[in-house]
Image (cartoon, rainbow, N blue to C red; front, side, top):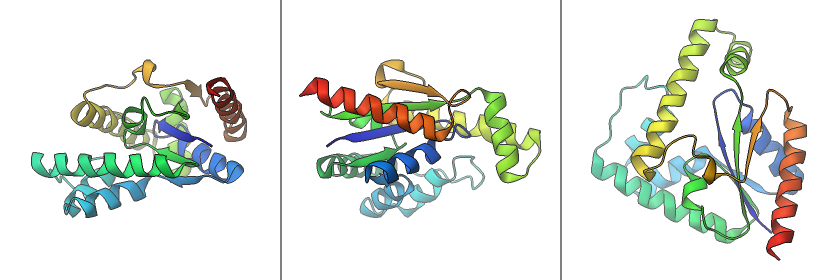
Length: 190
């Protein structure tokens, strides 16, 4: 079948879309589990905490050696998942790691900052200032992650087959668009 990678902004509904696509297609959805598995294999549990703490609240700074080991294991895990097929990989640089992998559809899910802030405010029942701070911290973290470990930066449009702005599409519509793009890409490759 195929692999789908989803890169998303905090508050863009990317996680919801990934779960919906996974259910609709019968694909396995993998996100945070990758962090823990790669950290365990690299014997660097503090990496898992640092990676989960994308807002920087814990102040954990793993060593360069631990980071390199983590990325090595993360790449291995993502390549193994891709060989298994029928998987949606959320985040963790999947769009870079599998950039040239056959039958892979790379998606970027975005939304305007004010839409994302509003969603976070509602979801977490927090103030606009707190939601804005979370969005800014998350955006900085994700950009730093790609730059530090993959020498690329967000947004790099050439990494994606499709960019969806969820200001205009609810998760159901976005999932349908992604499925259509996936079927077209696979049929053209055949």
